[in-house]
Length: 474
Image 1 (spheres, rainbow, N blue to C red):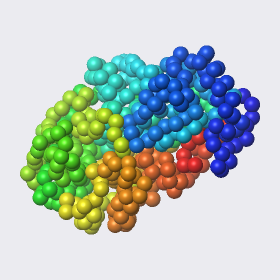
Image 2 (tube, rainbow, N blue to C red):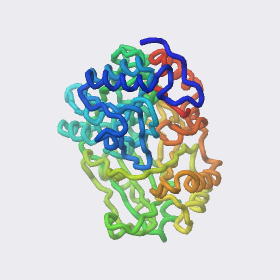
Image 3 (cartoon, rainbow, N blue to C red):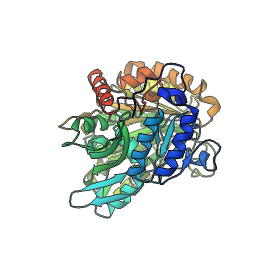
Image 4 (cartoon, rainbow, N blue to C red):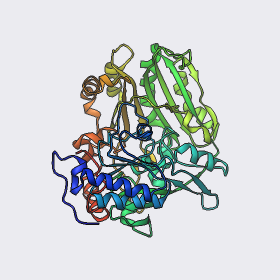
């Protein structure tokens, strides 16, 4: 690979570091001879489908889309793109991928598969796999992965950013359970990154998110877990204030074995929404407890006593059903969200929160969620990792009305108003898996402590010296 000059402001990716239109044509021809999956350019049949992701509001328009089917395909793409002077980005499910407007977009949906070693309690996960596959494979052996709220999210991208799931207080962030990665670096080298090999890269991949190379697989440790006490309970608008105030103080009493979140939902009158919830503003409390179900029931009693539930699914449940606790949408949708971490919450916070997003307010936010963090999520792994935001006591995420016409000004203004009112409780830390970290330089830098941010830059420079894998706000 020949040396390139760095991209300067205003240049398009197709001209970045020596890339040209003819270079793209040559790249396509080369890749079609070296890669087992499809190599597509705009206008080709299947191109739009290849680059489509979960968020339908994001339109990807790369110069080239490549569907890899193997690690060899991944290596071929990296080396060819480097020779052509074109940057590379990856797409698995597209839950958190910002718009790719040029360069090479590598799709991993064909590179899937999960194998479980029940003796070592480790799952080997291919780049395009989703958590549902891991849950099913691990569950056959009485094991479970520490995942996020949704089992439809891609495993690799989520884990690279840390990952705050419904069991984070008990088991830590998801990346704490990563045991190794296979990755094609920006130099075109295929390496294993774990505690023994390329440990600096392993440190970075557990929480540093992107800019290091193309991850082709991950080894992920599993826990022995077949059942838990958990689920979801909904309360109608008249009970929202009382239940939310109860939840805010109740979280202060919980052990690390208890995990919870709360969300105010403004649900549309659509038929797919169950009748008790359809067209209503409701409060949803989620709960997940690891331990004796009787103790879980006792711990959850204050929430049940705080109001009259209209739906209550909290009880003993299979660990394989953990995604039902949040029951996030699985079908593609136009999505806008913004998240922050909170230093703490108290009665003053609860009052301010209800003042700006309570049931009497008219806000274009379909969901405003708070997750109780702390516990194991606060503690780094003994060998250290790049996960940022561990100091957050709670997280706050706002999801906007799924109308792209509101995404540019209306929703940011609404979210900004909420954050202005709650600013006294907002942490200066954030986490890179929050959407704003991809678009706002201040949020991007706040996703890690300053020393971690600097160390990540050093690792990126070491493994991707030509910046073939651009990452972060431009």
